[in-house]
Amino acid sequence: MKTIWFFFQDQVLGMKWLHSLMGNLLSALGLDTSSHIGGSIHFFLYDVIKVTALLVILIFVISYIQSYFPPERSKKILGRFHGLGANLMAALLGTVTPFCSCSSIPLFMGFTSAGLPLGVTFSFLISSPMVDLGSLMLLTGIFGGKIAIVYVLLGLAVAVLGGTVIEKLHMENEVEEFIRMAPRVDLESPSLTFRDRVTYAKEQVLSTLKKVFPYILVGVAIGALIHNWIPQKWVESILGSRNPFGVVLAVLVGVPMYADIFGTVPVAEALLAKGAQLGTILSFMMAVTTLSLPSMVMLRKAIKPRLLGVFVAVCITGILLVGYLFNLLPILA
Amino acid sequence: MEIKVIGTGCEKCGKLYENTLEAVKAAGVEANIQRVEDLLDIVRLGVMSSPALMIDGKLAIAGRIAKVDEIRKLLEG
Image 1 (cartoon, each protein chain N blue to C red):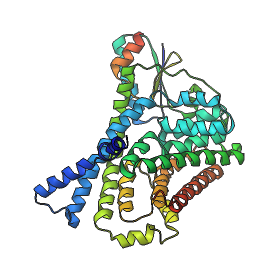
Image 2: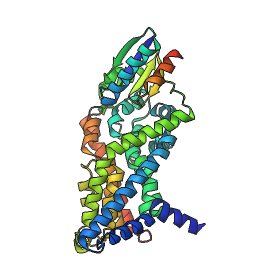
Image 3: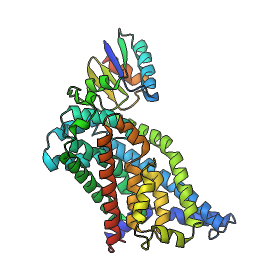
Image 4: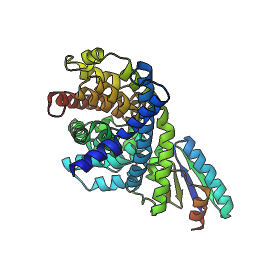
């Protein structure tokens, strides 16, 4: 059983075979993969192919599953839960509902007009970009199953706690009036056949690939640069165990950045190999995917500055806690 | 027949609108096609994933661009 799992983790998700194959191929072409330039090319080609292949497969599978959970349906499911259970359910649904920051306003408005508590909506808003099935598989392939599961569990915890804190602050007045005034409408989602779902999944793969591919190229290029040119000592002294503010730095750099998890992982992978601490890397990834300037501008249309500020503060606090917690847990490192 | 093409004026919504026009022509049905782009109007309709297509008050397509053929079949019902 264990052997099968490791095979799945290293060869299927991690594609170690591709690494050796690319290495041999480049050597056959007369390139020394242990040199700076050869190593960069090796890392770049391997990672671009790996991340792109994972993206195509993962987005297809995930979109197929997601086609069962359109936001209209999530809204109805959430209406049946109360208290902390509703926050937990919102965080879980956030992992399977198709969602990008561009659709956050219609979603926010729909949830609010359905009478869902503000905290539940925010649990969903936090979990949706930060944790999804894609990041679980991607992290398993690159960092191993244990780390991936802990990342997902901690992400869900941040979403549930963050939503609960926002609930307790009673900031309903900080939602823009036009949303509070919107009437409640329950729509029947269109029924889909197996073929509809497959078509939907294919379309999602194409549109995601088009949108995310530039980020993958940039992410992998930065990763290759770190992997082969930046001295280990630098990374260790800035993001390693000797710098107690590594997590803070990672979050400050990550928050304004707009990138997908697929573009972020190659950078994280290279930094980790160069001696950065795992907690620091995880908070970097969470900060990049959860918060970004474009998504904040978008959300500002739906909520007033104070609530937006609280949302950002709650996310940052949660992500910092995750980072430090991870760095303090030596078993996982 | 009342048809609504819903979405905040993004590129995808434009494409769905074009496909709908073509499908209506191909199906040869009598239809009043309306574009809904205002956020508040969209929420009033209860739509949360755009682009979306509503036929006679029923959500027919949500969150994707449907091809002409598919919309024609929906219209011919």
